[in-house]
Image (cartoon, rainbow, N blue to C red; front, side, top):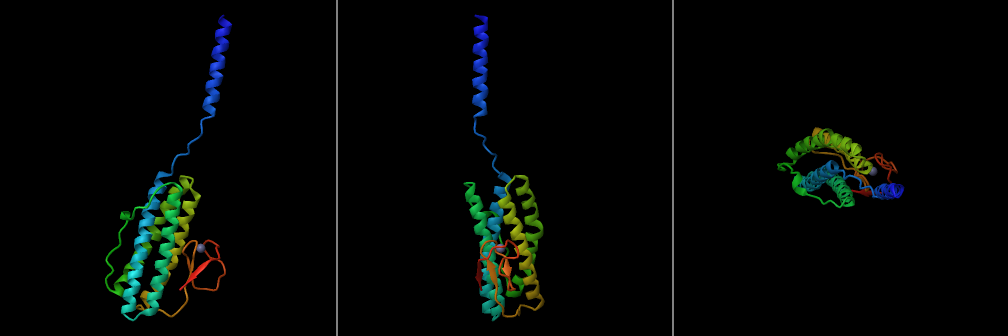
Length: 203
Ligand SMILES: [Zn+2]
């Protein structure tokens, strides 16, 4: 009788252990990166509109080449925003454009000066900690999106600096914007220098 009881206890224990091991593992959500993606999305989304408005202002000031440059940066920011939105959707999260704001536009030359400061803040202050957090939360696609946006932002910075140094009178040129990462290419490269994709939009 005692051995039967022991056997029953053993069977119950084995069943319980087997039952436990069959529990599906639920991966923890990368909550900090989801929040970072919302901020990055809001930032890129609003800045895309801000650069589009700056382009219209540049056109009104008869700075047509500068307007094209602003539109290239606006498109780049829009591609970043779309990429962040896709990543959020992959975790069933939604965007929240209230998480970022842009300063008033001002005159074309004020906008040019402000844009340099905005890009510097994004490249140096916003993206590096977001990359680190996404790596820590084991979300490589998100880390890559922030890294690529930082590299694209560095190109924005150099374009904007050149335009500011020339007081807004930039040369006429063609801008090729990588459809995958938003990087702006001025040279003849057939693949993106940031992400190696080979699809471009041209302005
Ligand atoms: Zn690219």
